[in-house]
Image (cartoon, rainbow, N blue to C red; front, side, top):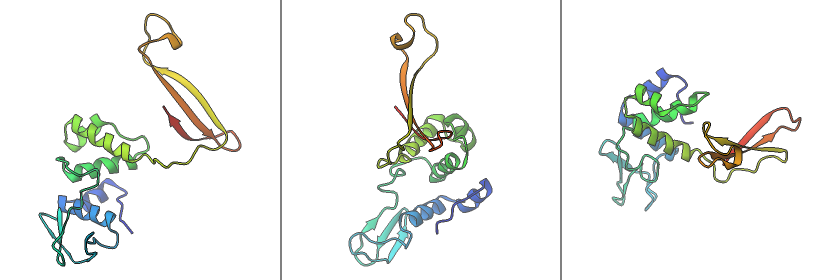
Length: 177
């Protein structure tokens, strides 16, 4: 079973170095241990601080970060994992400015990481909402001169669909567009 930190202290103990972060990603990608995609050998040895796994049978090099959102990143993996842990462990999520201040990255880098993480959290094969759905619309933007409501040119239209519980008293999942 993959270990997941519950507290900030546990996070810092689990991810002390960049190598610890790479090892964690390897354990998530290959729970039974890394395997060569060419010859299916399990005899891979690590070089370049664990960023490259080389098969001792055929010599093929496997890069654990290729094919993940971490591929080609210049930000430290520990920062990526800290941001991911932060947004998944807090009830109200996180914003780029606050995370940039606590993690030590600049705001634009933190915003880009947050954006990539949020995109990967969307399930494309998600189920349809339950049969009882409530739909509403609103406009986003401050007061403006001119036409109100649908005539407001600079406001963004937001449509919200919310599923209702069978007793029609509780809200469930939502969809926004």
